[in-house]
Image (tube, rainbow over all chains, first blue to last red; front, top):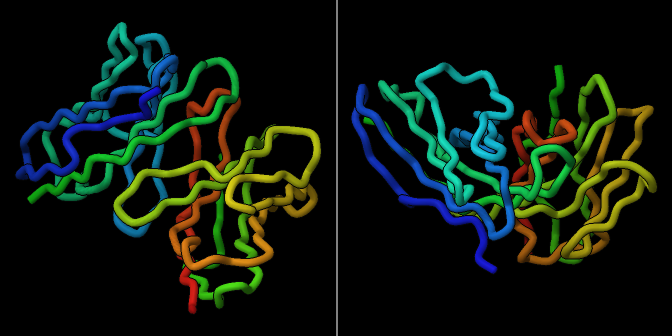
Length: 114
Length: 113
C-alpha cells in the first residue's frame, strides 16, 4: 500500500505566474484535502475534494482552484501567484468525505514565489 | 468560528523528562480533536485523535492526550521524552468530515541530552 505522494517536491515561480501541484492519494482513499503551511505557522485548510466534487473550502481566493480525477488523485492550481503564496503545500487523503476519518498527509510541495 | 490555540511556541525538555504540550480550542459543536507531529522537511503524522468516549486517548510513540470539555483543552503528554521526539507538534480541531480542519500554530519541541 503506497502512501500519499506529492509532486514536485520543490518549485520556484515568479509573481504573476501560474502553478499546478499534484497529489496522489493513498490507495482506497476517495477524499483529498489541501493545506497551505506558511513558514512558522500551522497548516491552513484550502479546500477538500470528495468523489471529484469540491466539498468545503477555506478562506482562500478563487485563484486557488482544484480538481480531483476518477482515480482520486488531485491537483491544486494557483493563478496570478503572489509573494505571500510562498509556502509548503500539503495534501491529505482519507477514505470518506462523509465521516470523520483519519487523514494521511503527503510530504508536501515547497513553493517559492520570487 | 472554530480555532485552536497552542500557547507555547517553543518548549525545551531534557531527555527522559516528562512532557505536556497545551492546546485550547474553540468550537461550536462536538469537537473532533487531533494531534499531529511534523519533523523537518516532512509532512504531518497523526499521533492520536479524539472523537467521543473515553476522554483519555492513547496514541503512537507513547503519547496520550486528555480531553477536558470544561476547560476546552486537549493537552498532549508523554511520561518520558526521547531525543527522537524533537519536532513540531500541531493540535487541530475538525468538522465531522474533515472539510474545515483548523490547526494551531504549533509547538516546537527541543530535547536536551
